[in-house]
Structure formats: C-alpha cells, structure tokens
Image 1 (cartoon, rainbow over the protein chains, first blue to last red):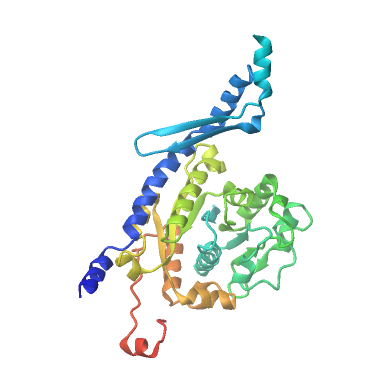
Image 2 (cartoon, rainbow over the protein chains, first blue to last red):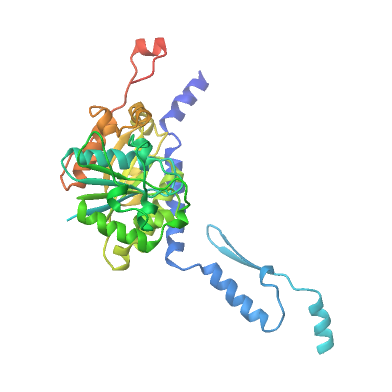
Length: 93
Length: 272
C-alpha cells in the first residue's frame, strides 16, 4: 500500500524538471564561455611565455585546468620542470 | 526573392533530413518552387528519404568542382513538379566542399528557386558550418531531450556568429522545430515540455512534430511524410510549419495524446 502511494506521488513529478534545471545551469555557463575566446588557451600561452624566460620548458608539460565550483572556481597550473634545471641553478649560484 | 533556409541541429538523429524533406514537399505543395540540398557529404540520405536514390548521377561536389552543371545534378521530384533535389556526394569526404564552391552554388540556386533548403550534417564541423553559411533563415531541430537541446543552443550560437548574415551585423531568422514530441510523457513530467524548451532556447517555435509511426512509414517508402500521408498528425504539423515559414499566422496545434483503447491494450495492438 505504502509502495503504491509512493509510486503515485513519484509519478506526479517526473524527471523532466531535473532535466530542465540541469540544462539551464549548464547553458548559462556555456553561453558565458562562448563570448570569451578560449580563456584557458590564452592563460596557458602567457604562463608558458613567462616561465620560459627563466626555465627551458617542454610546452607539452604545461597543463592549465579550470574547475568550476558553486561559489569559487580554481585555476590549476601544472608545470613539469626537468631535473637538469636544478643542476643549472646550482651552477649559476 | 528566394529564401535560403538551413535545417540544422548539432546533434544527429533528431530529424533534420526528415524535416527537410517534409517542409520542402509541403512548400512545393503550396506551389512554391523548392530545392532541397543535401550537405551531408559522405553520408548522404536525403535522396533516400525523397525516394530518388536511384536517380542520382551528379552531385553537389561535382557541381562545386565544375565537373557537372547545376542543371545536370538537379533531380526533379516524380510527384511534385516544383520540388527538386540536389544530392550530396556519397564517395567524397566533407573536405571536398569549399566555401567558394558553396557560395556560387547557393547564389545560382537563388536565381532559380523560391526556397533553397539546406539539409545540414550533424556536428559543428565544416559540413555543418558550410550548410548554414549563406542562409537567411534557420530551422533548429530538437528533440525534447537534454543533449539535443544543449546542442541546439550551441548551433544557435554558431548561427549568430558564423553565418554571412551575422558577420554583416544582420540577424539570421531562427525557428525551433520540436520533433518526436510525446504529449503524454511531457504531461507526466517524463519529458521536457514545449515551454521548457522555448524558455531555454529563446527562439520562436515553428512547429511541434509528434512522435509517430507515420514518419518511419514514410521514410520506408521514400516519400516525404507530407506527401505519403498528408492527413497524419506529423504531416499536418509539417504543413502548418511550412505555412508559418511562408509568413502566415497559424494556430499552434499541440499534438493530442494518442490513447489506446481497452481492446487495443488487450490485444497488444500499438497505437496508430
């Protein structure tokens, strides 16, 4: 009996409202991105240029990642530096 | 003054080709001179839906590259005098299509027809951007389903930025055509409803095509659904949509739920 009641209540609100809400949030975000030309690409290029002034880098080893949260977003910059760099630093000092 | 219309969606399988054929035939039935152009190079299907697959000799690429004249590649419909098809190439890939080639063909078609309807391939690559490039108006086809609506939104963004009209600072006229709509499921909250979709996409509604077996029946026999069974629900919805394209104001018919009778349920018959 309680199962039937539960099913009855559930049927009244299907999954469509969830679909609608997910879409609205996603599209608000995607439309924002569309107007600004590849922010991550630009950041990556500029970070690469600055660091390259001091360290010889493999451009493939520079990873820029953005993670969007509800209240804050994080920008993660992952740069792999070859070990030969430390040796060069030691020589320079 | 000819109108160039692109039928596009982003997502595949939502009914672009079916809608191109049905709207093209409906406009031709109204006495307009119509050409439907297949831009899906490498995966052509509009010829099959139109029932002209055995009559293709030359195609869009042949014309673009000057191998054939436009008049040699155009195929006249056997049922409607004023309906023509320009097929895509099946053997070439989509890179064979160039911006200049498409520009020249569209310009030529504009002088010969009232309506040039471009059936876009799925995706957002070269084929899809070229199909919309020279359009005056767009029909964005979507199903009441999240991935399809998301892709439709992306395509609307492209229509507003990548078309010649948009680059000139003009507005490309956009309409949404909702296909495979199931009124019953939408009413039960199992499927996005019309208001949800219109609120999200924020472009005017051209029509609501109900989920129907008549669409499959028509494609099985190679006939646009508006010709194959003009009295069927999807055909009537397409005919109304075509009238709206022509500038008429037509009341929006929301498909009625096709309820199965008790005997049908008992005997396991499907709703017609």
